[in-house]
Image (tube, one colour):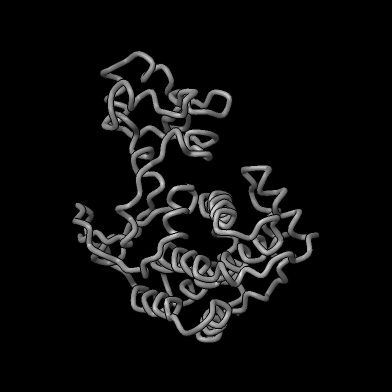
Length: 304
């Protein structure tokens, strides 16, 4: 299968000790079978720090940190043994993959601050390019979302319309109603979902009582890139036309929530938007239950 990625994909490189939101903190890190066998052969601290539960092996966190994360923010395994000895999940993060018929697509997740900085600050027009091949077998798909996905992205990238106009056009074309809940109601729904970071709860609670402080029109180009990201990540893997509309609804809602939050934040700038997008992705996208709950809100409405 051919492997495709956004043009900005190859620019990503982990910033390691310069990262302010390390993926080695507060994240359970699974150890795949191949890596586990390596650790068994080496022994020592590589073997000693592995815990097992329900058939899954993982690094047991110590004070919320991966046991191999040094105080300087670097990985002890990489220092001692090289990158070939880190687990698959560490090597892949923050990448995500979608297998679609006879192709595979890869992208970077907003949950990583460096990836978010690349995605949101990218000056190039979004495009996909073939970056190689993979060994995955083609899969049978009852629904091919790619033509509609590409049409949606093309509309978002049109240069002669503002972001609100583009969103309205998408809502009308696909009969999506984000206003099934008011924004405060949506924020209330978010507070009822699983919350991983208390800072996220504070952001949501503050936004529900705060007045609008800024007009974020200067950030429209950055917000458009975020919308393209959500469409590329979620709409691409739609299982039906109804599911596509629901995932598009989720994508539009995600951007509208970020607009609402940034307009009520102390500072309305790209760096703050990157921070909000990162924590939103961490709390919503990286909890399958949370993502599914929001998509279900649209599926339920569209199915009626």
